Amino acid sequence: MDIHIVRMTQKYAVEALCWKYEKPYDFYNNVLTTSAIVELLGGGYYAMVDSSHRLIGFFCTGRSAKVPAGDRNAAYIEDCVDLGLGMNPQLTGKGNGDSFLKRILHFIEQEHRGKAIRLTVASFNKRAIQLYEKNHFIKEHQFRYKGIEFITMKRNNPAI
Image (tube, rainbow, N blue to C red; front, side, top):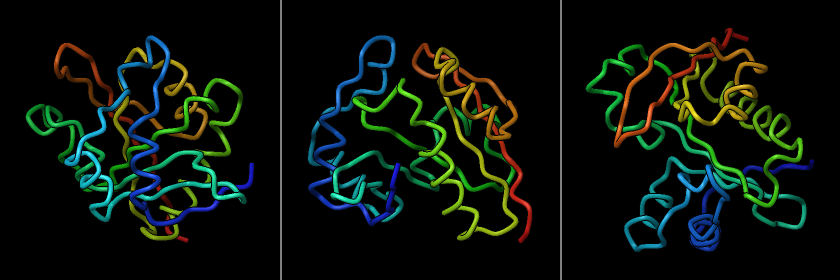
């Protein structure tokens, strides 16, 4: 899969916010609102597009990648690059996740040399957890938020 990383645009933000995932992944569905668009245009979000500029997915780093209850549960004490990501639901479950994640990790590792990368995933999302473990993420903390259990996972990023 040919993936290019570009700054998030309003067009890509609106498209991503309209994606609809099948159960149980519908937990990740968003609502298209002005505040949601503003969030995605806030600077920490990137769009991932193919060579025809079709939106494959997106990712963010920093505060936007954290689940609010994680702070209250000491899940985010260590200084890491927090990563949040989403893939076009038409592409999920078809073996695209590994190249998608590797492209994001390469980008972050170049931008944040030597800093560990952390992500937070809903514990029911076994497909994602398996992908993250395959890419050397290790489970760290568990906490609940709005009735859902979350897991933080960390990957060390060696200095290059």
